[in-house]
Image (cartoon, rainbow, N blue to C red; front, top):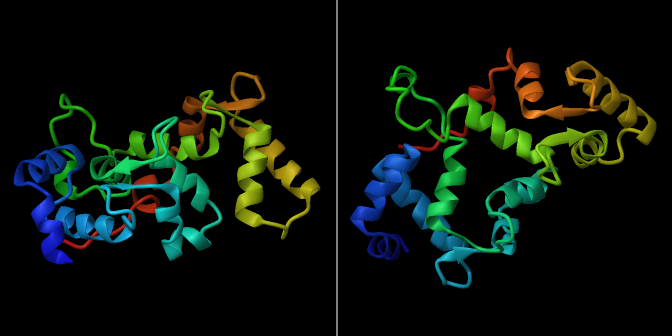
Length: 195
């Protein structure tokens, strides 16, 4: 399987993906091997059902939301490049990246891009704000039936009350950022990808 992965991924593609995502050559080839092992249709793309076979996503209460994040609006397949772009949000920020030239486009794993990714997990209707109903739906996914609807409603109301600065009974991206300003998002939204 390793030889199949390396023969289908051209060196130029690897270099482009390195620039775009910050992953190393070996990480890209290893993730390509994983991508091809998930690609049961062997057509160079993954569908939702391919992701649902990943045990960690299958048991994650937000698994469906995370899977949806891999697919652009209206799409039901993702190619390797799109797969890598989404995974790049979870790449830890290395010390040598913190002082890089900030005139270049912001890396996918920057704090603001990680926050935007997390925000979109809650913004179910993609209207750029998190409503009480959306917050309730995500909370229900996370806790299941362990908490009553009344308790969930109370948590949602309190969360919106604390975050909502403009009084529209929803949470905008800027309000979301403000609420999480003291949270170590870079650490909490990172997965160690072996070099």
